[in-house]
Length: 41
Image (tube, rainbow, N blue to C red; front, side, top):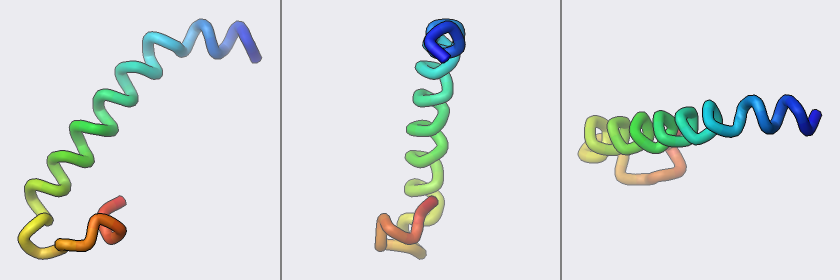
């Protein structure tokens, strides 16, 4: 488990970056149509 965490740490940072980027993109696109943040996955 610990080894997997170490191996995936750098990749985890990348996944986190993409998660934030995708969320921001979704907000930018759907913002005018879905003001409620809870409706955005």
